[in-house]
Amino acid sequence: MENLSSLVGDPERFLGTVWRREARVLSPSVPPARLLTPADLDAALTGGLLRRPYLEMVRGGRNLEPNDFTTPRSVGGHEFPGYADAGKVLGRLSAGATLLMRNVEHWHPGAAALAERLGTELGCPVEAFAFVTPAGEQGLGSHRDDADVFVVQLNGSKRWQVHGVPADDAWAVGYEPDPGPVVLETAVERGQVLYIPRGAPHSAVGRSGGLSVHLSLTVRRPGTGVPARPWVDTTAAASIAALAAALDG
Image (tube, rainbow, N blue to C red; front, side, top):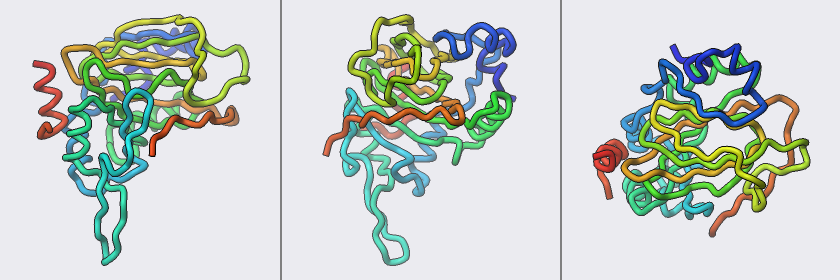
């Protein structure tokens, strides 16, 4: 059963020495490797109900246009835009874009159970976001989150840069053009967990030799909202599982 100990090992030690203080790579003895699989992502993409804003695609800090990865559908005689188009998604993914899936806990039982347990243990709301990134590519640029983040590496690996924790709340959520000195630069491998304190700027690049899939569990502290900085925006493999297997080989 996944919970805080499955992410950090000894919860008491983690909360007493790391939590809200510094970024740290953690290697739990029993990592949540089955939490979310490429096959689960394929099922969501092809299930017919996944729609923006549950998915976005980005590359190098720029959002792809919705029509690049979605298609309209007719329901009850009315046309609705923004439904996931698996063929388009996989084509863009193969070309180097990152797939971002928001609030995975809304539809994936394992992510939902973990988010609920973490929320209970930490006393804060928890959300889950999946990122699928090709080797050598970057989705989001250096940015700050208004949340503490547990990055659970589920497939492949990523190279991360994390900057210092802000001394106060004089910062904005979103892309950070001046993130300050790097305090942690490291590769996070499958089965490892990266903890990033709230407000610490961070970025990542998929490493060669595999498709990176990670789940970001965001722990939002009640009553600590900060202003949002506008995010930069701009106006084929058979499946994620097959693409991951091919790249891993």
